[in-house]
Amino acid sequence: MSERETRIRTIVMSYFPMFIATLSLVTSIYNGYLNNVFVDLIQRNVGRAEYMRTCKDVIDAYFQVKFRAAVLSRNRENASAGSAAMTREQIEGANAVAKLGALGTYLANLRDESVRARYTELSMAVEKAVSEAGQTPPAEVEKLFEPADRIFATLNADCVKTALDKPM
Image (cartoon, rainbow, N blue to C red; front, side):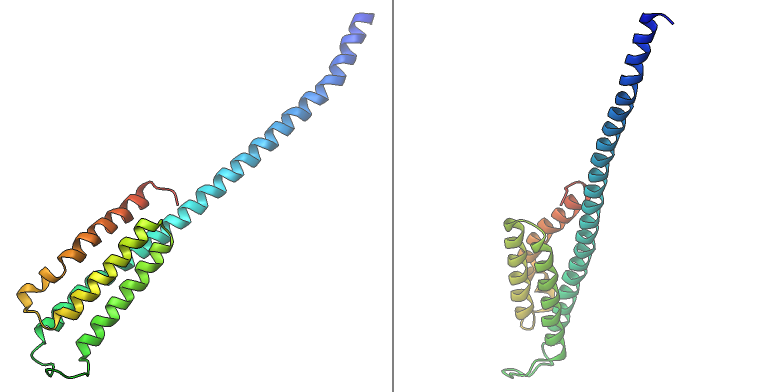
């Protein structure tokens, strides 16, 4: 072998393992990056799924409140006037309001302050509507819920927006 071939062979033998080691290091760094991306993706999806499940529960609770308020309104003649005792329907209505408030609070804790304030407004509007439902004719119960319906529509749109594309 000539001196030139020996020199080239020495250079290749020295630098080739370093090149392989560098490729291995770059691959390891890239693998760590991908791992972090996948962990973030999974965490966001879990958060989004939990948020949507609770949105579903809030929607269910909201309509249960409206239904029970209608029952209160229809049965208002059955309640004794001026009595401190609550009827079964009043208790169920108050229970539904409490469930809505609890789920709304849970969702609000996952979001920013403006969403938290809207959930508080919704709970207060629903509580007011339910408390007035016992003295309201059945045909006018929907009017009691108009303020709550507007707030609820906004919050429901927020649930949909969050489920579709907003990372938590």
